[in-house]
Length: 589
Image (cartoon, rainbow, N blue to C red; front, top):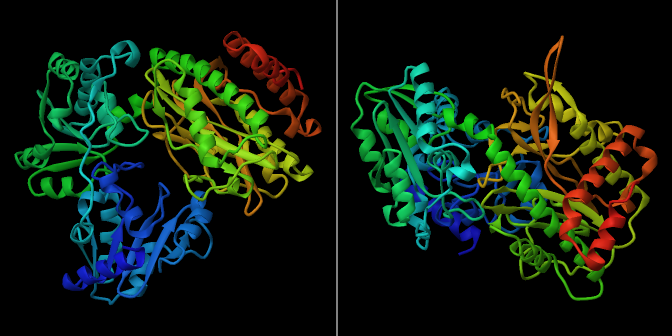
């Protein structure tokens, strides 16, 4: 079926159910960013494969809303689908709820699948729709037309040992119960997959590139329950749960368990699925707040930080070997954007404790570099030669930690304009790396520091400067970030973030430079406690795309010092021509 045929089939179901508009969010019951195959409903319906965006279908129109990372990609993938692209965040783009209200009758009916709709979205929809006399209902209509939907994986769930986690399951649950008591909660529900995995020191592979598994946790004053596919729990995993007094229950029994709660004060994230709230709302009180473990998870302990430092050396060695291969073979042997991604995976796989990629590699040659989250397919992607520029954004999952790195380099002649823009982007990365900031600072306050070199030239980029990163966990992790949005979460010691400013010229090239950074205490002064960033990533930048005159003496000093550190960390693991090339790369600017 084509997207047009799928939408036509959906409209038939809408007509049967007297539904005027149906919303397909990019979500599963755990509100994951990256979804198990069987929950990729929006991608299945629309053909748009980005990680963010949702589709609204009415009786005669359809639209997809997505953010600036995906404007170019979405336009290409929606071609011929009959779905209009709405560029979220741009002036003139209507809010999707206002658009729905303008398109359907005043007494109309809007439907969603409550199991794949966050409670926060349900509440927002209900409030705005009810003002206009429009009803919101739970109706999982895609169930009727997506007949070949896959089944959940049977991949094993294994232990992430305390030697790598740095904190035992029992200690984590005890800390969560303390937070529950402080909020007067008697029941706590954890539904997000990374929070489930972190709390129980377990990992899995139910979601591509994310070491998580399908499951829910329910914690009361006296019990802790894990709901998952019991067949997937390895012997060590069962022992880990038994030792921490965690009872194991089948995944399907979760909602039946909720039915049994009466007169409880339930601590649950407003980002949990609406079906949880529907099950509990009659007889219980809600404490709608972020799960306590989410912030605990974000502040990495020293064991986890050491894991990051360890894998960054391993990952840096793989990157240097890959970059040597790429720069010395482009134009000499046949290669494509897709095959380059596979080659990079192969270099990482040579490293100890490599589990897989932390996300699908983004390899954008020439104009494809301007597609921020470009994903090259095995068929039909660009042939890569020794011409122009290439952007490579990639990462690895290792038992000790997670990596995410971007380097943009010239494989052949590039314009002076490209070199200038590349330098401005690098200057933004350097300035953010060097910053010192007082306790209480939010990511939004630091975002401007990375953008300022571009802003001074009337330029900008349509994505965040930084996202949180997990410890052998999801490569995108909250609650912190560094971006334009007003996120109230302050940056705290132990938080790991990406530092990735960029610049993109559609149809020509894209530039992004990225390291991972960790918040640490710098000093205490008369003005309070100040923090700074520790740069975790070790991999050189290419001097042939740097306009030295743009950088200040202090910025050049930072870059030379960074390259010296890369030499100290990586050179012992390199040899021969690769080492000689690398030593030239890290020589002073």
